Image (cartoon, rainbow, N blue to C red; front, side):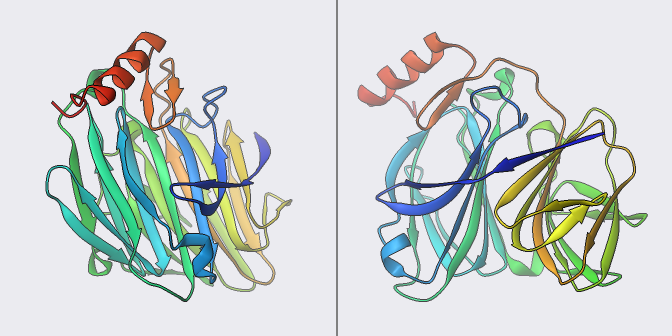
Length: 275
């Protein structure tokens, strides 16, 4: 087993929203995941401009809000907000144009958006969207810890936990894990699955290897894996089966070839992206 540490990088997106970003576009090293963005700020200047209307093709997004809230609107007429403890799933398919704007003008905003790659066979499917309310996302207890599974399933300390989103690309699992002081949790992850852990709060160790806040750990050839925290921590757990397909990326479009990217750009410019 190897544990690779990936440092998130400060960046901005949308109309100037400040974020921390981890992406795997260059080598597809996070497959089936493409990118993880974190917003964490109590300064409305950092998030207030939001993400005005913009297009996507070829991906799915999963937005999870820990504090604050965002509202989604798209060209299909869908409109819905997600607030603290809630999530939103969107499949761009062949094309969607949407906006994501903050529901607050001050206070703490803390959330994540994960990009998942659609397999080639599904990149041109119909777009879709769903809000997942907090009643569907309960915290579930462990010894000195609790877990919230948003999608897929995961086994911690021998207990299986399941989330409401069960058809994410790569049979992906997305979970929020909150560790109390002295927590010691075992993770089971099947061979062949990508396993990622992004630490958003506190400190923890993976099999004795220290992980710092805003770092991502990529675990390959996982065997027995123990997560421990002396003083408490919060982390996103991501697991999925790699699609092992070529990735061509340009801005909001992710396809398999440059020709498909060029077509997506033409479609958007000509107003036919969503046809």
